[in-house]
Length: 391
Image (cartoon, rainbow, N blue to C red; front, top):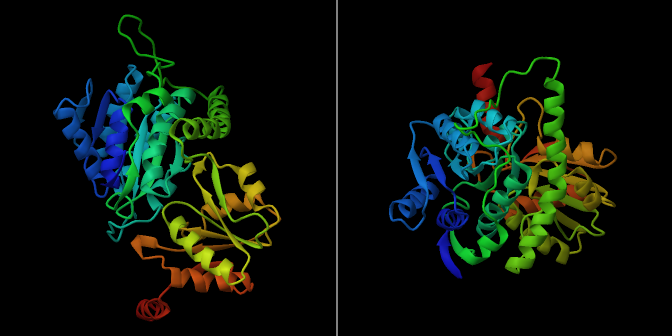
């Protein structure tokens, strides 16, 4: 049933209907409302059987999720920013062990300096950890992606990260059709793990692998991620048939067919981009938007197909590879090496990405006046003053 609901609450209710058996989390803004809501559902008995484990850190949260998943339980957690970094070692372990854990990342900037607002620096820093990464454009998609995430994770025996923009989505109240228990049960069958630690049938997982086999281990992980590029769109198609709405998948083209300029982006900024592009198209500019839902594994073929025919490509990034520039841009450039690609860094640390700024930037791009690397709304006077101060 569609209702006005906070994004975090919508995600919590959806996750609960996915019937997790172990939830473990350490509070860190802006994901706290999600696990608070889940803890109340467990305490009230509404979500049962399920054990909510209070832990002393984010590293412990992922460690508990690993242990729970390895013993055959459907496991879930959530985190953000420094919390995600704190569990980095365990993230690689979860992926290397092939455990289908689902985690919400409420995207938030990484310090120092301390910043609690939204950008994609946290999840982008873990792009090579072996986790599948899905990015939500809206709260409806954030809820829908969690149902798909459990299905994808368990079909592939890989962990999945659902990324939703902190505060922009997690704390926004808007209309969301929270999936019913019957719908979720149809989409998500009971968890049947590929491997289970059982005291009555002992085995070793995660043992040391030497140089003679480690390359093959990593190659097999790579193959599973390539397989995900087939599984993810299939699960999205099944979801659309069951729920009568489209969400998830690899990419989402918007007005790309025949567009001379296409903007590539991830997350909630896509809504503002689409509104801006609608206005510019009405004024005669040939511009489209390509939303990337699946960032890992990167859907190179789908991106290439969507960008075919575009004279120029602008990649709008919510994170920065310091000393290099774009992160998503590198993957887009590898997918479409012949394209003219420019990178725009925008919205770092929660700075608003406004329609006015996007209009100016896109108009410059369409006129081929955009620099190869542009920082949207950069305050040049502040930069120059600091450079003078530090000599």
